[in-house]
Image (cartoon, rainbow, N blue to C red; front, top):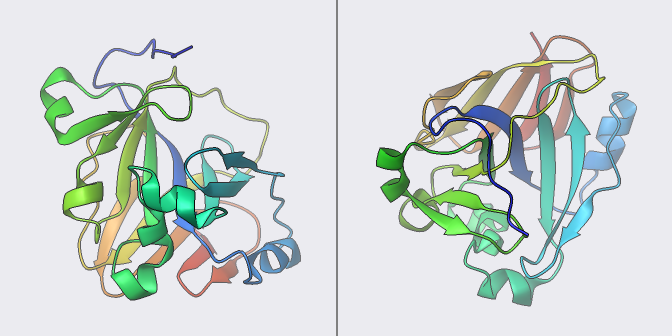
Length: 202
């Protein structure tokens, strides 16, 4: 059954930050050494991906990798291209909002329903893959979790900024340069999670 948001159209909040990773790399060990805890994650049938999540007070970091390359190649999101970012030039990052785009914003998005609920996917995914993937989960606002750490700011390094509509939550600042993401939180331990991803303490 499809879910619909209870927030008014245009009332968006930052839900999570997505980063494509290589499942063979040591990001899990690096996070454990920094005393960060990942959940068990889940597979995304038909999408060809699997994830694990690091949850903060109001947002979370989603680490995603390709589990079934054939499914990923035939899925409209084509996350295989973002997973192969070093070769394709596509951004390995994404910003997931929660709520509904305003009616006048919806021409910039298309509707994806393969996960069982409505997700508005920015057309940059096809037209400007060098930009981070931007999508809106058509779901009610997220409740605050019991986690102590809060995400304060996001520095998105890359050739172009993400085309993110106005939202409530930590700011995304664009820094020209190679693809890299720095997430600034208010507590915990800094970790270089991967060559293109770091957690910093503000």
